[in-house]
Length: 555
Image (cartoon, rainbow, N blue to C red):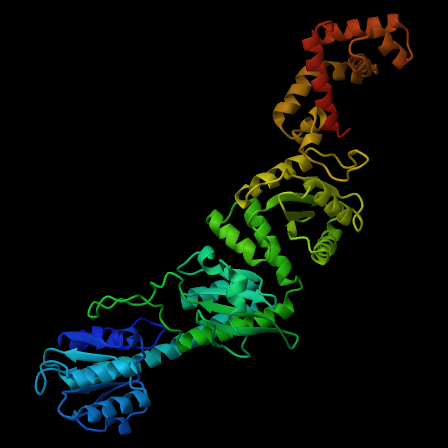
């Protein structure tokens, strides 16, 4: 009989559909006449009966096998027979069409359909005893396997807790163990962590808040809401902090397929005891992690979302929109502006991040706030299309500068779509790279933007580029060497001359020397550098070289 030991999918109970797919049953050409939508019912046992009242010997969950010999002849008796089976919770009724019947009686079909009881007919002779042996062996084997898997679940989550795993690690483990999408949310229905399995973040998180609010809370693990989520509470210091939810595959295709059954709409497989165990251990591990991780998980969620957006690490734009919307940020009819705040003291960065996050929350301004580096805070503002973006950035800048004076705040230009946010972050980063500490700003603005970048700031941003270094050295190196060896100030004379736009009289007056002295020094400069200072093009090249030298020296 070993050829019949085809186990059902691991991690869930054996179902009516699994039993009908076994070779020992499939050889009888089974056909589901009624209740095809219920073939996912779990089978607890197999019961062979030729009694007129088999329900008195059942406890629920049995697959009932009969040749049809004991069925009453009258319609009311058949209806009573089916009513009793349905009332006790029989998984299905299987009748062999070989001896008494060659087609199922209409009264039996009608009664089973009325009670939603799966009625399965067998067109060929089947050894019922062999069916019970095979199925019972599978059930007992599945129980042993389930115990081993449960032990592995406990061991895995214990290991995660002992090594101080964060919520992302815990949910990733839960999704891998269950093969389901798992989501962690707080009390205001913000989805902080989502680990998709067999679906996408878009499918799992689209319209999250509405769907979550329609799913009632539970004080223990249980199935809730119109979508049949398996949910469990997560606590913090004795109070409910949020919950973790295990979702069905939104595609509805994760359930088994049944070649013996008529075409039907695929439904997701039910949650089994092992799913409950995984979710309960997930909630427990999260409760412990919440106590041991000092950073609020909402802030960690913002940090992760910002990094994913800035580095374009999402699987698709649709996934990005779903994740951001699930965190409470509007994504439709919205302009986005990326802001970077570089705090001078790394030790003040976390405190400044918390202050900024609290202030934006209190003002009702939709934004993501999070650390992007040891001393860099990132902000993503979500603004109405008509809302002046510079005013919004100015409020952010002032809020940051209050607790952390000396912070450099840089902004990218607005992005009309979430998919363009990475470009806004890149612009803000380039502005920050081109901004020296203490860089002067217009009197009515406390942040830097792309339009501020002129030649000097561009060269400052490129100061580590060896091509800029080589250019400055090639243009001015011999002049610098001469000043170093002879103690002269020819570089200062050249700077004054170029700042005076080639006017020797103005340069002499600014330096406090005679025109003749300036003429002599300029002649020496031309000889050392092999340049013609009367050439506007060559003066421009030398002026750029001086700006590059200042950037390299941090002037």
